[in-house]
Length: 80
Image (cartoon, rainbow, N blue to C red; front, side):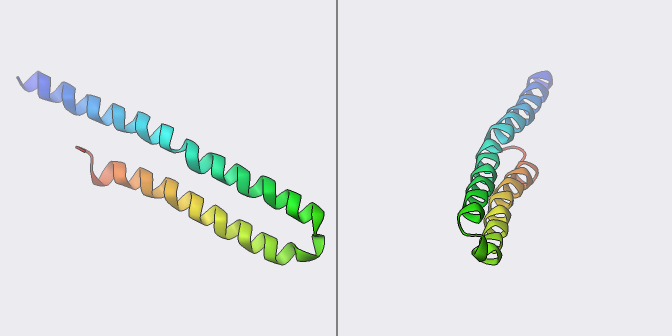
């Protein structure tokens, strides 16, 4: 019975790692969209560079916060 519980605990950790890896795709795509559209905006309106960069940095921070929250949840709730 103990071996079954150990196997289940190991499987839960592996599934959580795979789940986080799949969940990290979202922020990765979001960061790509933010910087891609920011580059296009800078090419169209170079005079608004300060505002565009500020918005890019804020969007990047929010996307990365989602990824960091996801990895912390894996450690905070390991049995979930």
